[in-house]
Image (cartoon, rainbow, N blue to C red):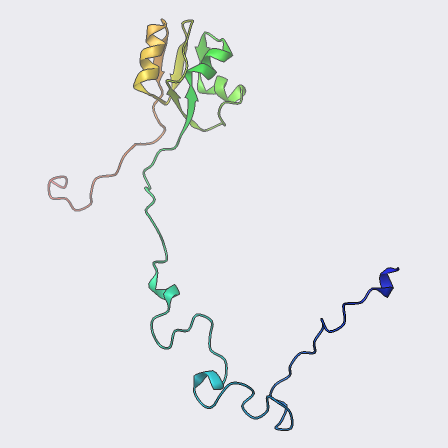
Length: 162
């Protein structure tokens, strides 16, 4: 058997029923649409609900809230700092070792333990990480963010405009 000799089984391929081709055949005149009414005439838009406000217009367009003052930190755990085996860890060192990207704000978290004293500089520390670093004999230096953190004061406040 060759590819060009293949054909579908007998009776599996039916001709499409063409309606609206005159009164001589089945499906003439109203073409299976019944008589009168909106469905018997032109097209109805997708999602049309008979004049009722459609579902797509009833549901809210946007969900949730994005805080414009959120500060995004890259987490670095103590076990990752311990693996580096360095006496001093700064954001530049973490970028060089692939633990952060240039320009990221780094927060040190407390997973893992330090066996040696390490001087760590970062933009933020968890309380557990800070306690663990100082307990191992190291030091913690918090780097200030390059912008003011928090929401600006409300405009037009009577107390601030005096």
